[in-house]
Image (cartoon, rainbow, N blue to C red; front, top):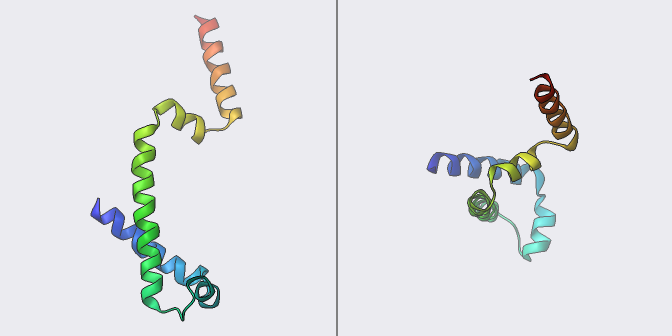
Length: 89
């Protein structure tokens, strides 16, 4: 678990330096931005996403995850295959 947290944190630190410009970030936090601000932002986002993922995992069942992961066309094809298999029996 710690390895996943650390990997996500390092990834978010790198992405935040690449995506969030210091001028925009400074306007939001109302002071000059340094590396500690990027580390704090990455820590907050990492922790929030880990907590959100834990809640999401506990609240969904397998069917809801499958519905979210696969589109309508895939579900229709699966239903057609199942019906064709049932008719063949």
